[in-house]
Length: 613
View 1: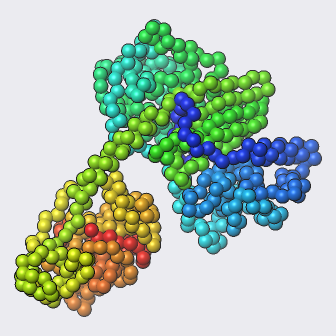
View 2: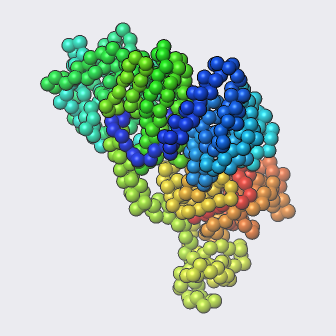
View 3: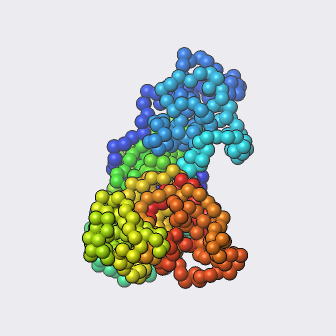
């Protein structure tokens, strides 16, 4: 029966009220004008049997002007793609232009939706759109051979637009047993309450007459005749509640479930896809609907399809979650023909970090009937998401309070043996670097580096390596608080406290951990300098003239490099074991295993920012 998998599954739930205040910026008069243009084009096409290209070009020529925004709408509808807002930094306010940019159709045109489009520009865009529609893969393959300056950026955006909403495994509070029961065929099923909403065990739906089908990215509850027996778990009073990441489809309603004690619970209101719910005393009863929503439309991730045998119109709202608030985007579909599909706007805010939640249906109209919903069906996600954000904020505050404990600066504090360079005997100094047997570099209170004779400072013994391992979330939260940018898509952070090097990918304040490398940094007597640096030069190996070989070296600055553990001059026999990794052991360079040093050497790029902390 279901579902279009044009994009990586992001989930839909149906909310209880109109939420948020950020709407798709579409002037109703302009929409009417474009819709009228398209309908006239369809009539012309039937009556005069013109090709679509001829018809649309004629429409263009008959008008005094057409804006780029109007043209982008027409082309998006023609090729059946949904709009998407590009990130703010692209200065593209029109989501239809944004989609054509991502599909390589817009070319070098400006992103100004109000700018007039010339006939030649229109022909160029439309010809690309026609190629795209006829054979999308062939169109892309042709473009890959061309030199497109924004290709790498677009590929990154496309990858980001397919990312779905996922929830951390964090408790939102406690669920309690409800005083209400669901009554079906003289059998009663226990219900549970959380945030003023009522839930039923997913396994109970099977007993009511549903079959649960797992489609990798979601579950689907399908009505069936055979009913397996359901043995209800022992009722509980209070248990921790989590949001389950895999949604469930009940009819055309897509709903988030709660996870309680490793079992799934569905909001009872989601059953309104098939039933009317009536309350008598403490019993909720189900009354089957004559025409559920699924008899009108099939709502998928990529498309909405008319399932009736006549044209229909519909009004709906798509809801998105940006981590702080719910964003609502209102849309209308006018005169959707039988079995015709319309692109669904599930990715509209994805590049602005707004993940698709749900579609709220407001009305469906055909020539013979009108279905209007006074309130949307299904689950109200706003209280749930507010509670989730509150739990995240609490976790963040706790991690912020403890961040200096989790990621302490690894300082080497030496003691002056005698007075020199304005420092007195017994004074504590921060040892920053060393030239083995020659001198120490010390930072004064202003951060200025001063050199001291080798034997002038007493150096403490090497501390043990911390054994705890921070979570991915802790690492990303901490690094994104540092306001570190990089000339490349990568950032390298060496954690001296744990002898770990974290490889992150992304951009300033939006770094994501992709790899953790066990390393070995400088001993206290020959420390690895702390601070901000850049990767400069690659060297396949060095040290042969000194009787050893270090492979896959990438320079940080001066004589300090990332490289492999040490081999003999032939590069075949190790002069030190891998057990050295995870401990301070070098004269200041940072060592990896041979395999991981090769990955680092081949993956990192010159200009990548390095933070040694």
